[in-house]
Length: 109
View 1 (cartoon, rainbow, N blue to C red):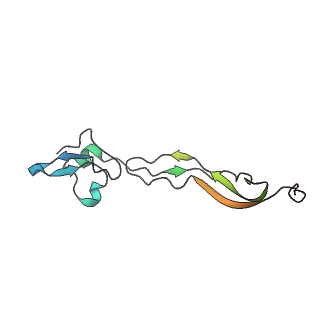
View 2 (view 1 turned 45 degrees about the horizontal axis):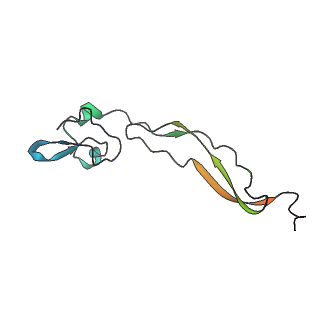
View 3 (view 1 turned 180 degrees about the vertical axis):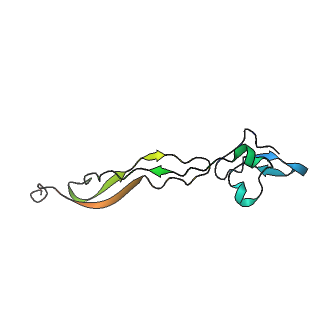
């Protein structure tokens, strides 16, 4: 079987070619772990894996509730997306609880 024009990142069971003796061989990067790559996988598909790179966390937002229990959020951006089966991106958003303490909270009825 030939992987020419049929290379897939990660694990993809739909990424196969007809091998010898009517057996499927695979062209996804996971085939290296399972040992069922097509004969030309390395020549046709093997490229250096690039893992995801993310930037720094941004600032926390203000509390969603001016008085009482609420939440804050922050995010970060992908600076280099993963390619060729590289490490996937970590979480890009975080949320945490907060207690709104606006100056008008004590006077609110």
